[in-house]
Image (cartoon, rainbow, N blue to C red; front, side):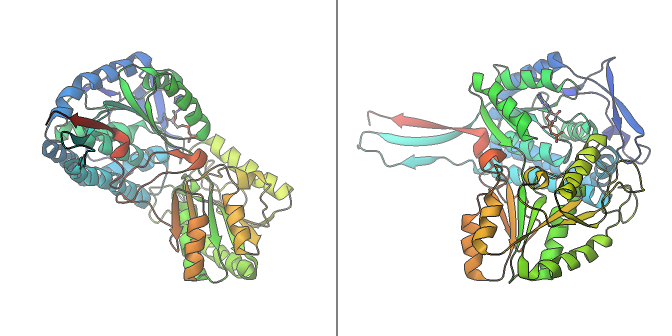
Length: 483
Ligand code: ADP
């Protein structure tokens, strides 16, 4: 923690109604690279979550009444401060999450870009006038902020998952309460400190950090003052939270798991496909919901592609995220290592072949070797579940129809990728893939200008882009009569 130059960014308790909470009950934040203790954080509980919701409720009238230009200016100020502290925020993120510093820096810029984007969109919350069926009426449509937004976010993007929800919510005029993942509260609290410095009023942005996810989650999904709930995390937890939200008919956005296919057709530029796959597979050591999970390669180019991929993977630098040139950091915890090991082993037991890697890496107990497996099939657990680790699993296919059927053979529908230079095929396959986002000859698809989100059991709602405000606004129809 001595590596953080601005000590004001290091906070040890939740940020509720503009103040920092203290508690005797504390939890540890640990560096996944070396298991060293980074900080002890005051553990907020359900009562604190309720206090945060009430603060957000109180702040709503004032915040939503501010002219859009004022909300926009405050978001801009927050954005500027984040960018000024990009290096420190990135180091903090790497310390608690493990990803390579270059990626952490990228995440801070990526998260901040949503704040900048929605600072601009705040001024464009347009309504409509609609031709009425008779001349004595006018139909006017306005968009209004839904109210208090509660959110729960995961550890794999400790900054950006909060930034992209909060930015849209605040821009629309909503107030916001977030529970970050227990593993990565420091990035969330640092964001709160900068929101404070930017002059965002008390109660508008609150962070509730604690270990009682269930208890805090109950408040955030059931409290009468919460109008909308937004979640990014696993499908299993998302389904549970969705049920809790149903009782109060809360508005809900769910960004859940994925099982991204990455298809390489025989007409693809294989070098470009390898490059795209390296980005889509190994970012964050494979721990993203849009990571390539099933790599489908047309049989005639299968061997050539596997050879090129193996060469690229051999060059990956596995090291502590703060080490210069690190490309693969640790997995988040021992459980993650165990899951990756088990998925890989069951694939090998089922007849898959190990081409590279296959075990823990000597750097430390939570590091896993970049691993390449071939001859995987659709029945293996590794094809059905999110791997969430640096394991690339190759499967061969023969025809375009077969590739599409294999790709869609999942309950998930977040991201898909494919490589082809045949224009007809590009349009056919893009149309047929049942996913919310499709990378075509591209392995990195997410940015603030684009709508991020899934279909099927990957959830609903979109984050970023001009559509991103929709999740945080209600449409109000005014019928003006007697004219
Ligand atoms: P992951 O497997 O990536 O950790 P989870 O869905 O378990 O994904 O976690 C995502 C977020 O959901 C985290 O902030 C976690 O604390 C929270 N969470 C986990 N279980 C619950 C629950 N029962 N109620 C509310 N929040 C939960």
